[in-house]
Image (cartoon, rainbow, N blue to C red):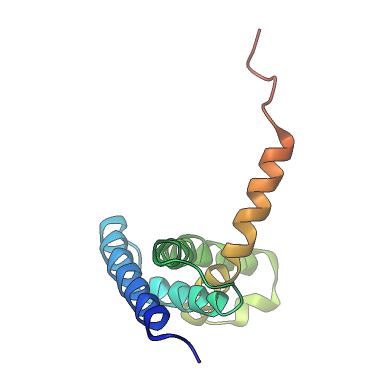
Length: 128
């Protein structure tokens, strides 16, 4: 059974993330339903992570939600342009599904991308 302090800190982290997501989404002009589905994806991905602190929880959910709302619809538009069978899916469910998938997998993609960039190291291009 979870300790009450860990449960209350998780709830506080989710509440902070939801507020930050709402404010940032309105400033950036993102669609609220896509933000919400990205948040759902982030919450699902949290089930597979080890327990983290409140600020890490806020950062994880914020990143999942905003990246889901930004890149989910674009990914589904690219899929519709690439695959003929994908064009039969209505635009709204495809957009929301894309936000959910990006929110779900972004927490796995970011560390992989950072490791890739660290292995590449500084580039010699641009120096004379």
